[in-house]
Image: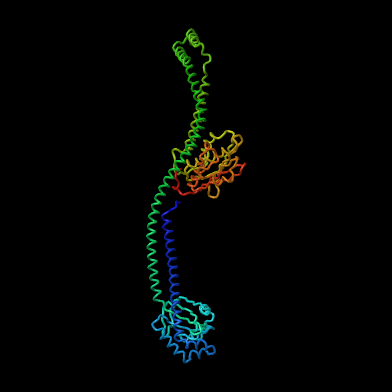
Length: 513
């Protein structure tokens, strides 16, 4: 399956852009929220200073002298209402919606919501931070909120714990908690945030379109280059195939030379013998005709004088070629012609000149054709063992697989000793695959070369002996047939190449190499 650049670029870009948009939105939201909280905290700090400077004596009583007063007494203290009125009048028109005061033990000594007076905040992190002199603020959303003398709903609130110092002594004496309503500000921030995100999304969209145009153009160029590379690989494969064929044709020519030589010799002898029989045959016919026309009264029925005349004229033909010799020579000629015919037939089957498409084929026939042709190129002292199992038909391109197996067999022949080398070829079915093994007892392949032997142009042979394309092309052909080619080798012991092809394959997915 080819890599679909445009498709994957589009998917990846959209995913990345979404991630960037959400991340940007998240980061911007955090930054703006932090800025808003910081701003409100500063305002609450200033508000605390205003309160402490304006009405501190009243709070001083609550904070410093309420430790022994019960919660109910504190809630009903006559000064509580007056402090409430002073606080609300001081904060009138400001976004502050609640104020609390705590003593250093964490007890709530004042709240604009009277019911909260007496609550313990000693373990609250915000209170503890303010008690140590560090203001602490947090943003939260409240569905309902008791603000002064009313209940409000659906509000965004910043609550700040602010340390309170005595205006006269500067000593930390308590903590204020001030709640500010930031719903309107937060809504504006979100509106601005959405506009920024929308603008960035628009820019990302323009960037995506620009990149998509570039990628499409690049994809067209890559596809064109791929087509050219395919053509180049096909030409290389064809060149490799023709090189193999050239080598085999030279061997086949040598094989054809012997039957051609004795066929020509026999034909010359037959022609010469027939020429020698021409005169005796003519006189024989004359003798037969004469015997028929001039029958004598004796038992021979032949004119003795005429017979003697024929014998004198045929003197010197005692060593005429026998008819049996001519028949034997012609029989040898027929045998030679049969050998040449068989060789040409196998060569034609090997090249599959008449068939370069996907067909149902038995790989054993393929192996037989290859072995017949390869035998002419392999030294005669190399022993070839066949062990062909019963195979089902598979869809394949025989001419391509011929090239694979001839490469493997020739490589094995080059690896073994030409005097006592052995090549074993096996075919069998195993777990839904047809497996063909080509094993030799040659020198083996060093481990460092095993990972590279299927790479194009990799070869351990000399420049004149190999191009380094045979195994690379074989691997490509096998993979186009949805198969696998593997190798195992041991230095000094031999090498085994295994070709695995699925019994059931999808039609129409293979290309000619």
